[in-house]
Image (cartoon, rainbow, N blue to C red):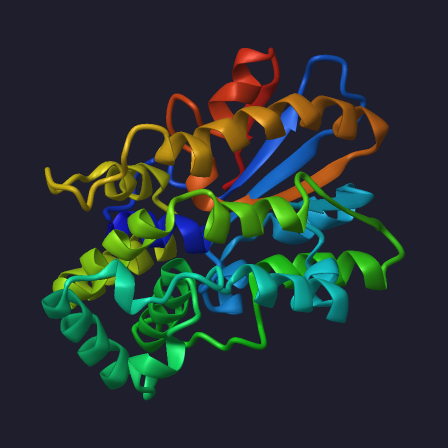
Length: 294
């Protein structure tokens, strides 16, 4: 479950020779190369300063594409819609989804970390509580994190200031659907209980995630995402595909048209880059040259 939380937030151990977050995409008729950069949504903004080729990638591209257009997620209309989709149906309460013992355990952790009585959250979907709890824990254990400075927003803001186009590989609504609407309420409750019953383990895994990203080690990041505990807290069939593989495939299908239109800097969660179904390999399979920028 803790890997599931980490992936949701990146939607990103030992430094290897191919450890990189920034990659150049060329070949297959592209007149000018494009680039793709893997982010970790809770990473300190300073990580960009440790990657010497970032200024080059920004200078050589004329548009920036993220997972979504970040400014669209901040509009009052979207914020209102998101808040509505975080709420339970009128005929269901949070307490009804747990045994009394589970509800007590969840309530204790919520009180300790969110500083609110769980009864005050009775109409929130379990996934909304899980997300907020995970965010608080990751923030607490991410050195140098500033919620006002986020990598995804930074690159889009820089592009807008320079008069460049900003686009999204998917809609903001599609991400909300993944977070709050893709699983049954009972499954959401089960995952919330998984997150709180062994919270120390979750914190330790979050620290490992921070180390892997800080060292730009995509292999270690992939290994963390693929860890399993062998119980009902592991992703069910189809859940990882919905969060990663299916989205990667959809993005890789859109990227050729976007890159042909103009040289592009893609900025997406680092967890989407590695693996057999990762964006890097999918682009290579299409005939592009994908190389790490040192």
